[in-house]
Image 1 (tube, rainbow, N blue to C red):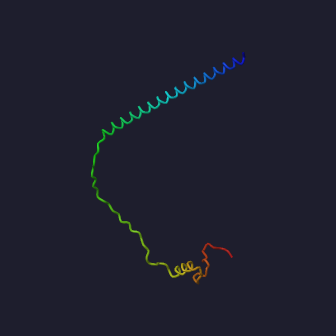
Image 2 (cartoon, rainbow, N blue to C red):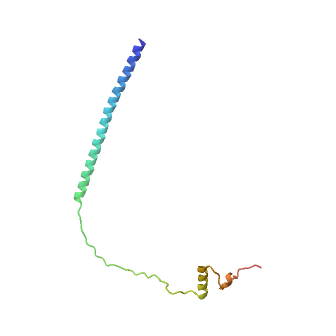
Image 3 (cartoon, one colour):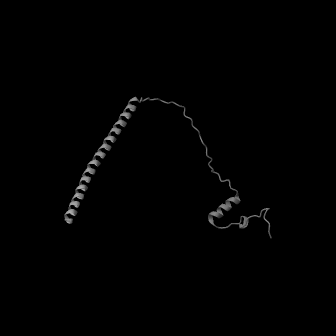
Length: 116
């Protein structure tokens, strides 16, 4: 007798599960259809509002004439070499990498330099 009760309970649970699935499935379809209808209605409403605004627009072509202002900017171009002979010698030493006789390779002392 107990196996019959267990089998009946299992069949009852299976029927309840299938019924719940079918009901949930149809309910989900209904919800999705309602969402799609709402989206379609809002899209159509937006399109009608845009069409209304576009129909009220007026296109105006205007020709604008204005005097052109030009500014000339001159940048200095240094074509002549204005270095002193000692400066040129130092530049040549730096380019060739060989020390020359200008200054002897030592920096001059300043008034603030103190020491032995």
